[in-house]
Image (cartoon, rainbow, N blue to C red; front, top):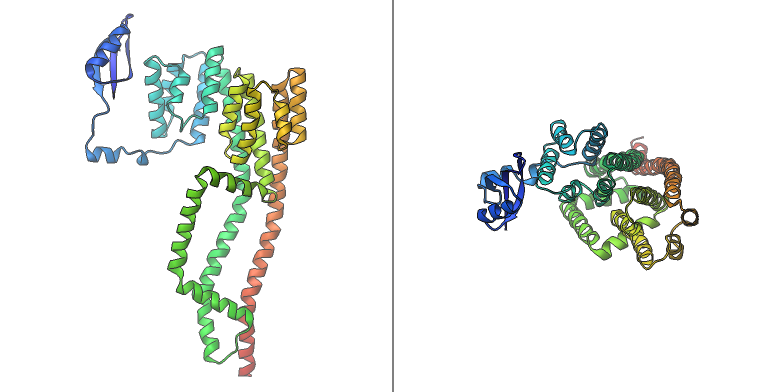
Length: 407
């Protein structure tokens, strides 16, 4: 099957266009004639291009579509639709507004897909790397309910909150990462290039080396003599770790280890449960069936361990159980969360309770981030202090002996 783009005239005399798959040009004409379209132009876009053209148009040269791009697109499109403009007009306006060439192409393809007869949600579904399953499902619910602008506003709120949480965590860990990186670079430079000069001086003057100096001397010799092996070994270890983590078992094992790290595991759990509650609440309110909503949320959770908790809940709800009961039976969800969901089910206010849970966990996430930051900073100070003290002892102890000899 080949892909073709076409232009045609419909029964109202309007020019329409789009993409279609067919075995030949004749089949394109046959298919479109059945839809009462008079074809004026057909072009095969599956034909092989020249080598230079394929190199210049490779996906690797396209600018990646970021979450921020999708967030701005969603916000502006929701505003345009709320103002009463048709969807296609709104998308055409967005093509002019968007600066990212890769995203501009995606929006153009959305327009072509809608013109060819697909719904907006079906068009979005053709770009899974740009629009998540949650995004598509909520748009689909908005189309069915005739409240697409309202749904887009809800999607935007979820994305904004998720990005805000992600940025807070990044900011909290940026300072420690920079400090550790600088420490490694400086110490590596001293041990590899500066310290050997002093060692030569000490040995030349027959100074006996104390234990700290011997340790640093052995480390320096080992790094200098095996630097290429260390680099190759590090690269192999990183590649092996990535390959192992990409496997089902590897992902489960590593995610389980991450959750057991003090404070870090607690932070990841709270962030994930906050997103779970907020997304499920929004999907439920938007008219998405509970089973479909649980399936979407379960797939959107990146931590394999927490995803398995949700998988068990999904299977039990599928059998006809309530939402709170299997959550309690897993023994992994916090009692407060389970109790609030149970209360919501009893009062018919599941969505409101899930929103309250999300707000409560947002506060907990902010508090945990502050705790982690407050704990890391003194640990870094102690680590740097010990490191500096060890290097100082390794250098100054033999220097004191040499000064004594001079006297």
